[in-house]
Length: 224
Ligand SMILES: *Cc1c(COP(=O)(O)O)cnc(C)c1O
Image 1 (cartoon, rainbow, N blue to C red):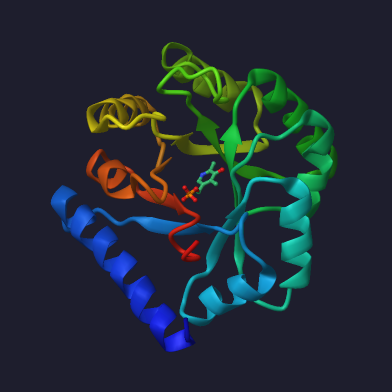
Image 2: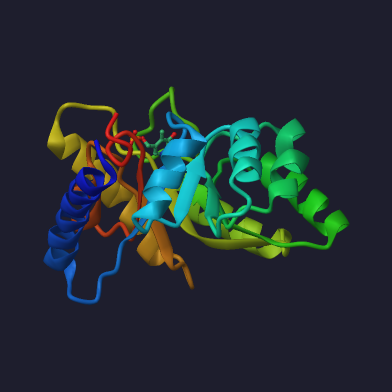
């Protein structure tokens, strides 16, 4: 695709986001984070060229490589993957705009220690395994609210902003919808939460209709 064709292609995705968000309300704003894990720095630069600013990766080493290669550009980096405790320092070195995948109390406590030692804070989301799938990380829906409050209280350097979830792995739209509704209900019940990160290339419109205000689009944004 030429840059002009790519722009038309992205405009179409933006229009789809727009129609879905207007079904919620005129005031429901949705942010797109472009997940660049299947893409090169050149491809990220092309997307930046048509106005995309927020990008995300799911591996710390890839985030570091791309953030370094593209450090001249004013990009906003998100981390969306499972984080091993021994990689916390590597992630904090990059100081991402938002860590979407805080998925255990152990990780929160370890991260709090490291943040405190560096005298820095980190914006983060609590990951919820709303479809209760073994293949997924995150807190079970029943334990999410309590975990959120515990982290708020005991980890002052972690700035919890809301929740993240991956839609149910299913062909059945109702099952996927249910998983988004579960996440949204928890999100609504949290005091002061402002980010509900859910929806990927295959299910973002449904996620928005269920209340998502941050979607993580990988393959579709890079036309893979
Ligand atoms: C890869 C990934 C995405 C994007 O997936 P697509 O289906 O390509 O849009 C979103 N969120 C997380 C956590 C991911 O790992």
